[in-house]
Image 1 (cartoon, rainbow, N blue to C red):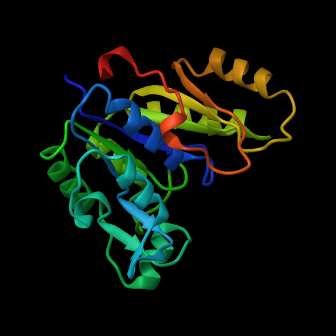
Image 2 (cartoon, rainbow, N blue to C red):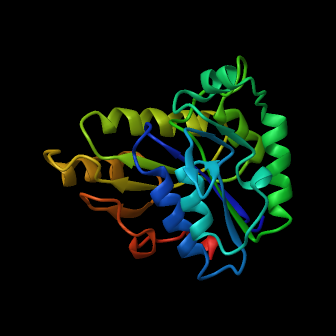
Image 3 (cartoon, rainbow, N blue to C red):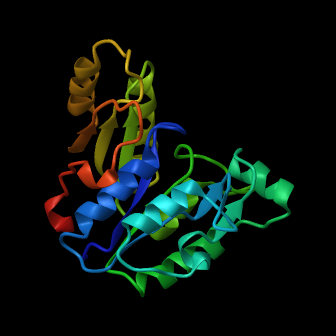
Length: 226
């Protein structure tokens, strides 16, 4: 089956999923003419040029090579920066895997590769019965795990990888992101994950006091994605 995109998840919120997703889009653009990012559910909006939009969505759009309607690359935009199912309830919006999957299908018709960025971690609820993991399963794309390098990341990464595989999806690779500048034995933790994740390390993002330019982050694509 030809590569047409992937799903980005993280060990937690705030681990750099958007940065890695944008970097992956830039990397994929060297091999595919039409690449686009998708944030199915964004919780937390800012006023940008008179419109309320997610900063994550803006970053993905800047890294994409095609422009698409907002209803496709961010079908659900929620004002409050809280758990999506709670934010949706407060906003009076209905969120479902079926509707998000339909938007993804439409995006695939307009791009060679779609990079879907989740929210929070793997099992984040989007309504009373479904999670973003259910969307990932509906899409069926290979998964990239962003590991926020800080105390506790080994357990979070290994449990997330276990859940991804239990859901019948391929863990295509992982990215190590140094989110804590004071983390001791960072390289030892990376080596432990290399041994235990049974998926390739696609890249390491060093600590930056400010968010780095995603274009300058080197990622190694799986050969089937090129």
